[in-house]
Length: 320
Image: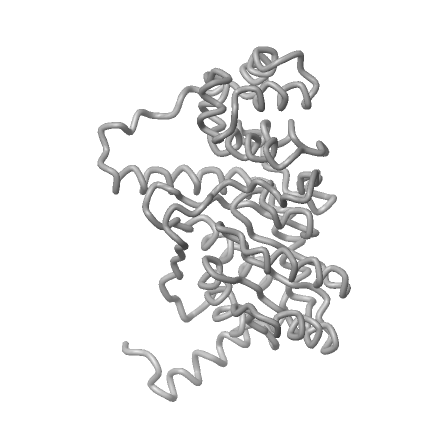
């Protein structure tokens, strides 16, 4: 819809950064998923969707959320993995996998695996061992985009997010560290159609003050991009935003990310971890999808874009 198309931002973080949403270290927290008409993030009936549905409504420990996250990200392979292999995939102990299965109501991991083969049948993922490391990184991002397509098969959570973002005047957009470029890219385009977008991409003691200022100005929602490694400051800021009365819409790398417990509507988009710095094609694309949904609820969005095009042409802003 935007007439000013630009390459999407990329993001990275400290080498070796964690990429599994393990939750806050202060104890159990509910997984932020649920039926779409409740504002949750349930995906469609694909393997990842059926797996995520298995975890919905469960109170999982940080270690258990780490296992659940790994299972969703490798939904096609999980029914074929042993408990030892799943433990290695998630970076936890084998007894933790057993306790996880019991927490889900099964007698043990073999019973859970039998259930997975029944409800989430899938062929093992294609062998990519012949690819070099750069090709493998690209293939992993393609798989992340496939998972995002599963999430978007039910458009209701995104449509709800679009309504919330369009109605908030002003609209604060938060993203720190690795997620700063995602927040910046969204805010850049959103400012062309939304009358008051406020980018919050720097932390520090002023962050909560800026959230309070947005609330005083009339803000009703906040959009957050949260990517690993997850800064504690983001979790604290979202908690403050909710206490201030804002509805928090979050794009995160996992439904089990630490920000889940302080988000009202979380839509997951996985990051790639095959290179020294994480890649975030899926979160970037999800940001553009949210922009589209927001435009659908801004009746003057097209007129604003046309006005921008006219001004840009008059200024000779772009090379033809």
